Length: 226
Image (tube, rainbow, N blue to C red):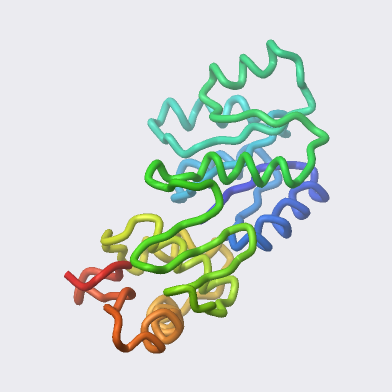
């Protein structure tokens, strides 16, 4: 999942980036409103964490312009203003959630997960499909109850595919949602990482269906071959 953080306080922004990346999210950061607006309206993000008070274009203007442009990316609004009327103003402008500063990082993560949660997921922090289980809290993966060791990026890629079993994702979609804007990605990066997780998810289970599949000319999907 790819997240944009728009926050002019460099210390807060960088702390959010580090913390979210430890949770296996791809994170881009903008430190001012104009740049944040450009990124939020041109790049495909799964979530925007938006400071309300920014230099130049402020957070409320960014939010309104996103919604006016029919960009429905979930927005978590951060602000030092915690009055009920301020919260109501932010929510009425199109924010999906509102978090007052200072905040505990554990609460921010809980709100991020809630906003990113897919309707078909039965639990907040776990995904299960075709005998494979992912636990986002513990960053563990199992197949048929056998533990599978994944790197942070492998975990993020598998999670992205498992969020929509059977859906075919092309390389551009995967790169846009699993890697951040500044990542050094080669043309075959996605193919290489698909190979990594295939070696861990499928290769040790030769008597079970292959779950990391390719539709030639279209992309990759999680689930039994079609």
